[in-house]
Length: 252
Image (tube, rainbow, N blue to C red; front, side, top):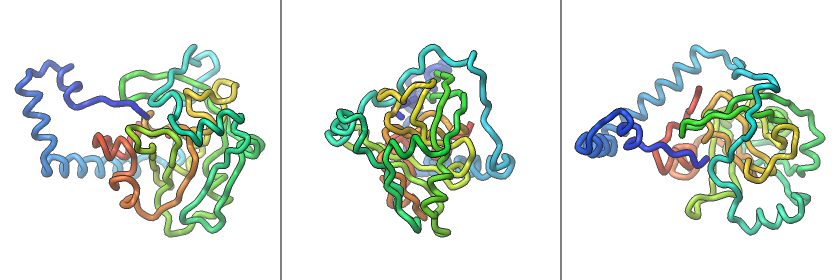
């Protein structure tokens, strides 16, 4: 979630000089350039959806492939009094809220989440910073919760509201309904056969395996079904999308 690669860094690795760097940054910050990038992103998204079957699976691996250490990305622990209180009590009072455009809003305890039908998958986490790790994730298929809540026909996106923050802004992310109902999209409560560590997103984190790491929201407190992303943050669908112009669709 805190994975940042700047345009300046990317160009520097190619060997561009200072004038080139400054020029590229100025060009990239113009309205016309941003519009061009946004158009290219939209085209990539539509093309990917056109050629990729909805239920095409991300690669899964064997137990022998699991990384010895699955490093933490983004925040290692939320600086949030409400989260600290939940953590101190072993998340006994935690409730996942499923809200928004649903017919039956849900409030589910962590204990209940762990009794629901679960999926275990060994997948690779690809960070935009350039590192990868393979881990065994266990959690509840997001589709199960959305079906239980009765997502309205007007809904187009699922937004994840989190306990952690960056500079005082609570983290948020979103995916479309195709990824939300994908069989490998889960709310994970375990990593490598152990209860999910705080550094990796306890009590629940998103695993949307066909996208890059910054889409894998940690410390989830609520899930919201919405018709539009316009009212979510600055309207681009996620924290890093809003503050650093990350692509909303980070498909791999």
